[in-house]
Length: 357
Image (tube, rainbow, N blue to C red):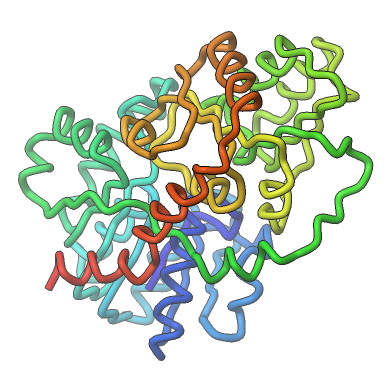
């Protein structure tokens, strides 16, 4: 069983889909529950192999209520249950506590640094409500990085000591990457020379910092492509207009296959202000040897070959981009491939099974 907020693509959803694909290949029946109604087709290639179940609402809260009655009626029993967001971790944990759903091994995965959430109301909701509702029913809570683990221990010591928590890095779907990277790069209308970034258009992803850094660089015959959609799109478009960059900075929206964009770029950037271990970083290092990333997690400094800059710092980001552009980085290929091999979905599931059994 897998539970997700929606069927849109994001880092957490990519991990859940990798898990679903793994268990399909093992011959298991997989049910996927979404708290909201359909809005994307990210799971379309698996729809004939798994059971996709949606609610009839766009609201997470009403979705909780609807799924509550669906699961109560069906009396579901599962060997494994996977969630990857504080909402779903709490919700499924509550259903397990109430014995509405029977899960032998409930695996929750934290995908956000919610203790650092800048919105005070959201931070209170996450940390003082959701964490106290269903988290105690989790059989294994996965943190992507040591930094997340330390943060959780500092803020929720009592809960940390009550449940099993392990640091297991995000998996990388190497088979999917190998199949997708062979696609032809077909995007026309953009200069051959471009820098690329990708992710949900949220303030914490730092795309506004990247746009300002790109303005400061003033690179001739070079564009900036940003792949992804999100609530911060209007603000980014306003910034692009304000800086007179509408001919050089392009928000391309959701892109089904990002790998050709990463492979053909002069350089890839992860400009996050707050983040944990974004999947897009490993997608980029699978395709390119020139990667600039912010010091959003300490683990980013341990991946040899990355160019690391301070988060929320326009000048430092611009400096590192220029430094990376002007350096021969071909030797990074071997370093990056070695890092990717450690993160296969098989190793991810094996680590989970070893922890809970």
